[in-house]
Image (cartoon, rainbow over all chains, first blue to last red; front, side, top):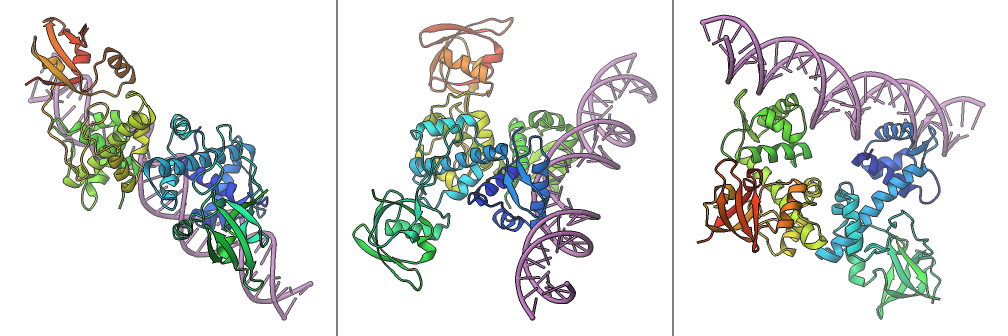
Length: 221
Length: 221
DNA sequence: ATTATTTTTTAGCCTTGCCTAAAATATTCT
DNA sequence: AGAATATTTTAGGCAAGGCTAAAAAATAAT
């Protein structure tokens, strides 16, 4: 049976919060879902009680996804990222404008529409932010990028991904040309505040840690 | 405040059922909405109690839309018809495949997306079935078509609209070439069963009342 | 004009998913 | 360790939107 919008949202957030390996905790989920912690406990208990269970859960020990839960989460994420790509490529949306729209559409599109969008776009592997789009069989391509904040001085790299849905930040980066696919070079790094000098499209910029930690790059050769 | 999917569905059905002028009754609404009559009564009472009320309602006398309710209904219908047009024109859907998809999408698209689709399609006035698309200010173009079943013998006309969402019927009509825009000519009519001989694209067909009553045409000059 | 039948409404209940307040458990600090 | 603090869970409620069963109203039939 198809899960509700709420359930899909919970699974998606658990997926995101457990990408680092550690289980997700109630408070973080509550914050991400704009819901009270007590509500999270309630929902998590239901998800863990389903047959088959969608999450693994022991009280006071956080939540992880079961294989079923992970599949359901990836299905939603595939919808989301295909939709974002589609809105940008066919309706001229900017990359900072598509998140909320996709957030609503992702829960209602059919598998048929999913396939048609996928085909119309030529089976894209990454969305406008550079996030990988799970394939039809829900595989995710491995990610070997590193945060720009970890790039060594005097090395060059290609921007792979911008891990933010903050519209203001995205517009700012777009302005600077800091979008997926772009070639950059790292210069001096301040040891005090971690500010980094970066050359993008012949222009020299200084970026703070709050920015460089969200830009993921792949070092050249 | 934006109304829920349920409320939008109720308003849309009331709109459709009252197009003939008469108020809609509980049973018809229940059937259209796949809900029990008792549930309809409950919801209608809530809609009539809102400030401003969305429906006009007196017990045992059926339901009509207030101006606010009508506006809300037309907004949803605009979404639905723009979406159907979009799916057909940009993703290669057939006209019998789009109804259910649009039925779910219509409730979640933003006004921004509505505008972008409208613009991308060149502000279409009719959907793939020939139904009029309410304009941005929710006006509906007047309809001067008549059912094919009422077309006089030996007159020719242009198909304007096919008033059905039955996929099998739509596929059949598509086969026959009986789609909006097509030129047809009426021949003999059987006085017993109302079967009508029609010439479409040089081919002669005999159509029953269940078909001719759903095809709306405009007689040539 | 009563009775019978159909239609509509009321009454009471259920599920989902959220809330607040209180209780229980963990964690941190001295 | 024990107290103070922070986090998490339980308990009890609420609103939306369905349902069934019973009551009431309208319509039809004798």
